[in-house]
Length: 223
Image 1 (cartoon, one colour):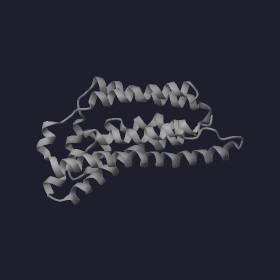
Image 2: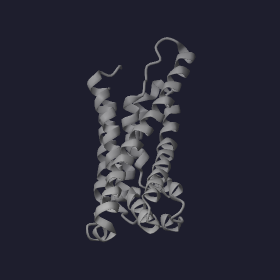
Image 3: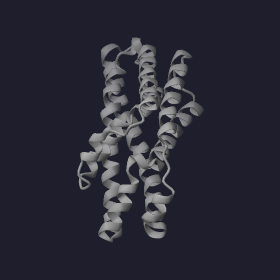
Image 4: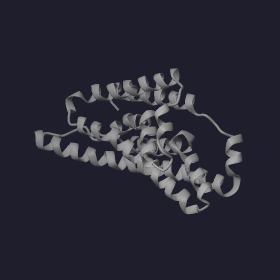
């Protein structure tokens, strides 16, 4: 079923808003960028750290979205695929809500390996999974009457969509996290950060459950 313009706009808006949400969340790494800048004493060090975190996050988004872009070739099981993806997101959200301990393996990653840390942090927190129900609503699902060739073309379009979704999301995350990091680095300092640290673990887990539930709802509703 083709999507109307307002629905497509809302879905892309959700991609950007989820990126801003990830960027604001300290768990995605912007405090590490502030720390890197203050330790080295140069703006450039903070900028490099933000870019490294962004690249790792982008890789994590693609690692999740690209397999689902391949699955969209299974046109006849579109609803089942979307419901299953939504259920997976809800399950991860429930797990994180019950188990609030931060993954210990992240502490073993050297501070200099920010790309790896960002990739693992995004995977461990289910950041990529949050995009799956949104992405599946965006990607095409109607191959027309062209048979296998049309389905193959459709899958190629959906792979491209996965890259665009991941890039749009990561760009929004980078801008949001970068602005916060820059303000703290230039004006407030780490002492302010230590006094005003905020923990979004419960909000993060709840948002996964909400996004997954909406994904199931819209899949069953034929949207």
